[in-house]
Image (cartoon, rainbow, N blue to C red):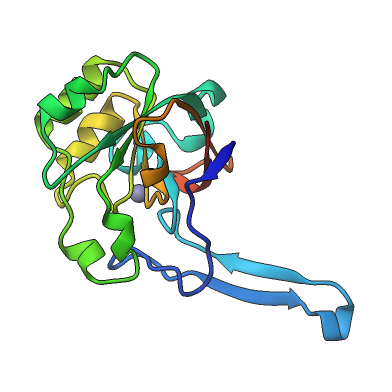
Length: 200
Ligand SMILES: [Zn+2]
């Protein structure tokens, strides 16, 4: 059984405050061309997306340089009630090469300002632990793993751990065994929208 952990992308899909708005414009229309084609202008951090090291590490690698095996792996879903704490994460038995998804419930307010104003940040202890455990990716159902000046982004990306933001449907994964597939398009820049799937 597959579960889609990605949000739909259209011009109304919310973006992080200050990020470019998604623009979708027809390049060919059914009425005049009998086919459809579109120009799409999208920020690399719109909707469900992957952050590559180059996003927040000066000499970090770009998304196209990430080995493909890093985009899939055993998933671990950790439920966060309120704030992140190391004891909760340790209980989840995170192993090397895991993909750790934090279910905070924030996706319920994805279309509200609260989604950007009032979310829990991953703390430094938890980030350091994930680096020590050598996980492949860290995903959240939030707009970001932390807040400006984005030190947690730098801890994770600095260790070449990828970050997935704006996940949805994580409630379906609590206490389940699953594999994550998250292959973004091969852009030679800082990140890209991604279709994230869990296979139960
Ligand atoms: Zn991002």
